[in-house]
Length: 493
Image (cartoon, rainbow, N blue to C red; front, top):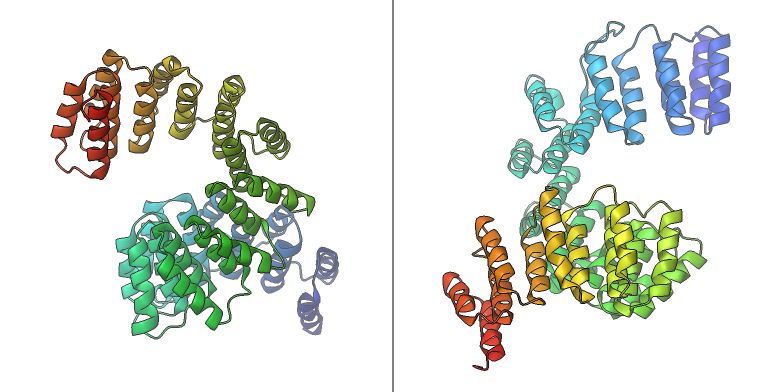
């Protein structure tokens, strides 16, 4: 047993791939290669310091597999975000003939529920939840509870996430945070804020960094600057101002609410900036019309050795589009191609928009043709770009091609399509588009209604514009403004 104890102590001393390989050699020499405890430790070490192939090889060589060994290899794949393999391994675990005990424990289920969440395997996760009802001790484990809440949140089932949360008499900060994050990620921003208030004010649970990141994100998406500033004060009072992910979230919040000066101060205060920090500030400048500052900062980022990601590139391209800086846009296009970003839909769409706004439609079309998967935003960027370049006659053809490819516009896209068509002023096309709007159920949308009014007004048909106006029950300021402008076009202002 002394030899085994010595090997266990060696496990504790391993801190890199080289020492792990030496340990493995010692285990083989001393005849402990089939010891399940040592195999589990070794699998975990290889997971940290070596390739997944090495981990899998070691696992495959084991004659018997305990739940701990299974957990070790599941962890190895989940760490690398290989979720499909994680799920397949779990299925193998359940049916494993070499297993001493095939009942998964709390660690197994936390890991596998994470895989179900990432793969959107709702039915599979529900089956696991059903299994948990037969094992109350595991079901009421806080980590399993958090994994269940995250799973239901990622699948958009917040009512089920709430039911899981309510099963716990004394939820900890992790469970509270899972709910706040779930509501924020699913667009229930007010609920996220309300849940946070209940957590802190009613239950007296101290939030952690992750909770506050979700709260700040909710404030940003609601454009609630007042609450965002209050949260910023809370962050400072609690001593979290050095947490990079939280400072990045605050920076993004100030950027989205247009408070550029405060965002600048925050940005310059951060000593060690990551790609998210740089991207947030570049996006802040770009979003608020400061295209020169945005591009200068983009170049500063590259000069300081920080590699941009797709989000950074999109923000820089948007700045080029605003500044009509074709040369800089081409340079960024070249960089995006070298880094492998060009084929990402968001980057390709930003390139199309940039080339169109820089009055280079041929280059925009080249980008569009190379796209492996074209979403509605890419199609509408091309369509709107033609109208911007005085080629609105091509826009209708693009719209037809889009429909033939199986892509249906949403309300925002439809507004842009109608705006492009208004440049032509052809009544027959206006009527066809109006028919599509009605058949698609957009006819009560005020923004689309306003676009139709503008379209008919520019086609010389004020009567049709009035009919559209009268047909919409809830008339807002946008609709009234469009109708007044329509009368103005026809000299009846």
